[in-house]
Amino acid sequence: MRDYDCKLIFEDGTEYKGYSFGAKKEAVCEIVFNTSMVGYQEIISDPSYTDQAIVMSYPLIGNYGITDEDFESKLLSLGALIVREVNESPSNFRYTRTLSELLEEGNVPGIYGIDTRKLVRSIRDKGSGKVLLTKIDTTLEEGLRKLSGTELRHDAVSRCSCKKKWYARTSNPKYSVVAIDCGMKMNIVRELNRHGCNVTVVPYNTTSEEIIAMKPDGLFISNGPGDPEDVPEVIKTLKELRGTFPTFGICLGHQLIALSYGAKTYKLKFGHRGGNHPVKDITTGRIEITSQNHSYAVDESSLSGTGLNVTHINLLDNTVEGLSGEDGKVFSVQYHPESAPGPQDSNYLFDRFVANMQKVKNDTLNY
Image (cartoon, rainbow, N blue to C red):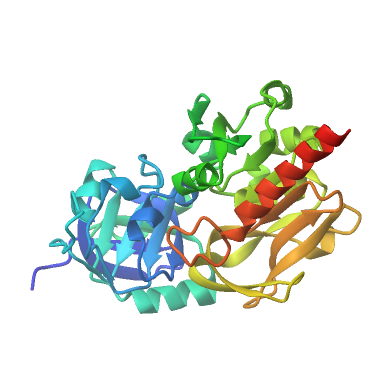
């Protein structure tokens, strides 16, 4: 058995020793865990994980390799990957490279061989926090100095949003949608295309005047990383566009819509990440098994007088999972209905967005 060559150091002095894979570099990140059994490629390429060290609770990762068609983003922006066992010999006719090769290409460090069950329980009990992934010979004192001297960044959205607008068109389009990119997953764009929408993806700091000039049928606000209060540009734009277009927000987009209406958000102890979160649609009583990835939630007590109503709740902790406006034009969910990875219980939300756009079109024709 070979010697350990890297380790994790936590702010409380806890250490986990293991073996390195992927890029050989040191990193200070916020540590989070994901409970999904499959979909590791979509997880590590999701911009919502920008700067975070992801602990995969499922013990074997990498067994079906990496496939070129399954990325959520071509740019890997996660901070590090932490697994129990990594498979370097995938069994999948579609795979083009191994997980370790992808992390090396993307300059993302990884560590394996540690007790991830113990680590996940620790994060669950203590909450997420800063962690240092470093060489095995880094002393605890040196590691703690690096942790205390490194501030986590607050500009993640500006780094993972597109730098100029781009287009995703579909055959026989019925609707035109402007999507504000706060770190958007590609499967959201694919789903909008499948629902007959031509999509114009714009940077997070696009102004309301620029969006109005595009004359869209609907407005979409994407997922993304970090604290929603770190993105005042989007909040300002949404305030100015309130009531102008049918609007749909997912994950960070859900939180940004809430803030633009005057509600508040707060940070969860360890967040929601994985494809197995039960959510109740309180308008129908239906239970959905959802895929989630977020650290923040909307404060339900702050919704009074905002014009937003709760439509969905998380059955594990009763947090707000969905909102709708009293005018019927805006709605949002905290989870990911585009389902990659995750169940497909919530795909109907794209149908609802399309129906809202069609209703406005019909009202305009009948005017």
